[in-house]
Image 1 (cartoon, rainbow, N blue to C red):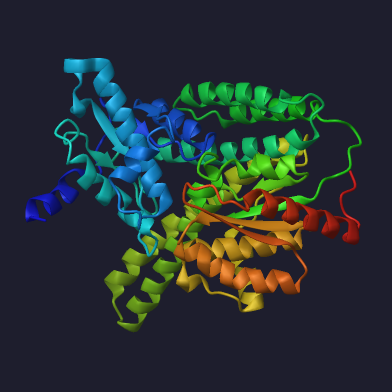
Image 2: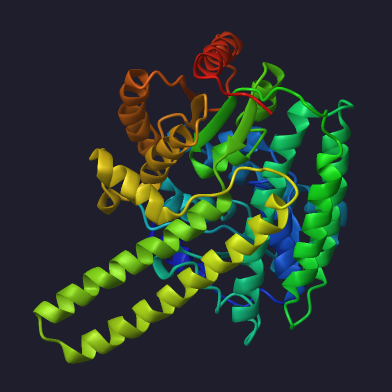
Length: 448
């Protein structure tokens, strides 16, 4: 490959103000992606969530099969969307009207290379070479100053974080109510309307950031959602989902595993999106503290001042996130007993206490292992690890959790996905739920 292709990675995978273009957002989480897109629209960006999984064949055509499965799915989504736009508009199709939003991480997960690989694929099409890719990165704690209009970064950052937490809460409300609904399908219908109303409220948020209005609407949704439940129903076995963030939140990719678990008699709690955002901030603080110790050893007074300023900003953001996350959950917990979220400090303490893993290793493995321990601590009856086939962090988590939870007599199931239908999947899920019911009955849980 010539140097020109590699130069394109810097020229057309970058951070810039997306105003004036249509921002194409991947549909990772049906709830979270729509509220994130609404947050972009609130600052003037024309953001739309792309249709998902319709272009999987295209994604596979232009990959080797060694990539992480979410890379194939998201590549298929952008190719399918652009192809549809080109057919719809004909000669009026202008690639410079669009920008593709694809965040990244700083490794060692393959996610950090998605936008580079997909840039090379888009460049193979003359019609799509003009579509730039914009990103946010864990390297700088998902800073957004360079991708939204000047002066709106702080506004967008606050709004988008609350939007992510609201998405988590809406998903947990759905999973709390749906297994116990009076009328089949009533929960999905109601929560679909609730999401639409939250999207409109988020999009219309003014510069004053009136979160009280959002939280009031969220509380009303919780009250109405609870009325859909059968009274006095015995609690089903509670199943906690951990694993890779894309697969566990993308129903098409995980073959609707939450609904399958519910159909076989479980009540499911999925690991939150907010957990990852909080983890990125927590890791940034850890890195700043490491840099502080290094500057102290080197007696670098300028370095100490610079690192302290960075550390202080990260700590302020951490306290803000805790405060807002607590507000959102409390607004719902007053009316509906959804599962609260855990702090990253709690996850680290559980890992340190059991000497199972160390935060210095990083990746989602720390969240999966620590999150599983949190589920166990709160009396859950089973844990499912959802991840792409060959995913390194999730494979590490499995190697730790499987023997540990077996010893603790907690049902555990690995659920790897690569788009194929596993022949024994139904039997594995049914067997797992049977074991979870036994665990619930033997421990006397499941009372309303």
